[in-house]
Image (tube, rainbow, N blue to C red; front, side, top):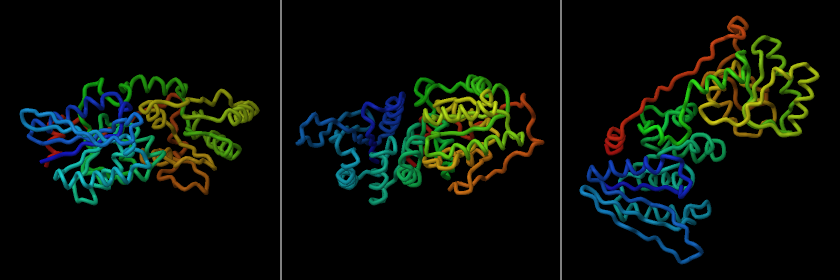
Length: 355
């Protein structure tokens, strides 16, 4: 059997991913599998640079490292890369492609695998699960739907994706050492303490993303204040950014209403803390005129958190607002849902990959 591993993340691979790839390559070689890795190499201005290959023999299998011009991994070089991959698949009789990441290499290799009728899997990182979903969702759609397996170094990547895709048993959390995670080490107790700090132990509603001049601030404020008057929540937390002029306008309005002590700007949070704060909210409030792709609203639906959206908003809530009787007061316990994903050992991941 021959496996092709491809990545475009030269020098920008999240912490721990190189060790993860090394372990997977070692696991494949130990089972007598021949592995070809495709990596980008800066041409340093040499436009005539051609692919170059190095070979490394092990006791059981053989590793070939092929260096392609880095320009092949750019958006403009996709057709060149696709043609080369299709040729390589036939020439080397590749049976399974494993892509690290979605953008560029993952997107192109999933197309090549489909065209040649070969198996395709992907190793997903935090940027695939969140940033790529926000900026290039069609690429994530193709890679996720085409993959036989989706392998991640922590469960938060898979939890995010499961809000939008049917993963079934294709999703594998590869068991890694704590220092090999592709995001900061998760400390649930610390995240809960942060949530308690910004909420002051009170029930709260959330807005997310960027509140910009394009957002109807007056309409947003009216809905937030209305929810507070209905005793749905006692506090307003914004997770994300606010345009400076918009923030001044918000501050003025809140001051006139005597509500400045009920508003907290959490800023941009790391993924685990973001999730912890969002899942503690009574309601996620999405403003009219929001220009992002609505990932926050989709996540809220996926996590069964009530949504407040304007009539014209493209994403409808799946869960209604909580009735007043459900609001337990300022000392309501803040919970955090657990993951269905459990760590899988390298041997199990590699064996399933080869089945």
